[in-house]
Image (cartoon, rainbow, N blue to C red; front, side, top):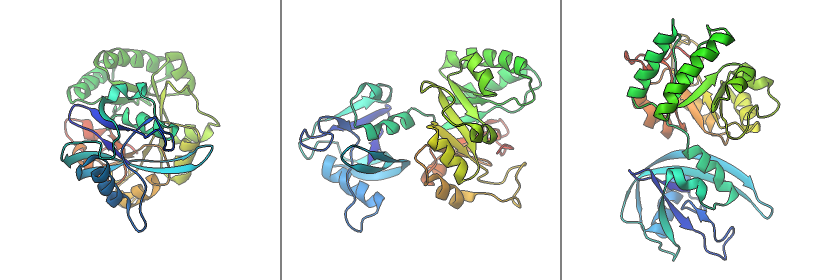
Length: 313
């Protein structure tokens, strides 16, 4: 299945034929694998057969397993960023370009809903380094906004809860004005008092949870380092996970056990939630990360002016 995304942040949708399964609903183009066919080859074939497009570039987005009352489906979804040709419904189906922000207004099969949630997530999440003062933190926030960062995790472990609330409120005011999603990396009770739009759970906090700790309106991420943690985040219905350490960092040098890209890909492929690569990455490595199955990248120093490597995992 392909999410065809153009330069105007519009996605190409197709209307399912009334007589087909989940007929009359909108869908992302793509279909079943043929015998002996790999996913990329199937995507190439389906886009040409359904839309007359020749695939040029794409990367994995998300894998979804969904049980309907009459059948189960496994969706292996890719984001298509390059193609040749002009899209047309080759099988008589209606097609249309829809802005990303309007996807939630469309009627989709239930199995497609996690795709829509994934598409709303940012490609990068900047994590704030420890700041000596609120003024220093706000300077850091301004720098991230100037770099075009659309999501920030406020990580200030040196602060007591009362100070964290004050710093968060100031940072949130600036982020909200610029349309930047601000994750609170703090105690769940503090996050509830602040009524945060996004919450980040440490791996310890993640494992203590028996159910999703906030409503569906709150975007929730979790720090993960292994498959059991990823699977627990998935079972709680969290929105994304940050998986680390991928590459060497100051905290985790090369002699420390690292995931590497092979390990990251192996783990991220075993869950159906978006997974971000964390640890030792630079912003220019985003496309490489996506080719390894990452939804995006996260880090501290990747977004600092020295462009060094992240100390955080």
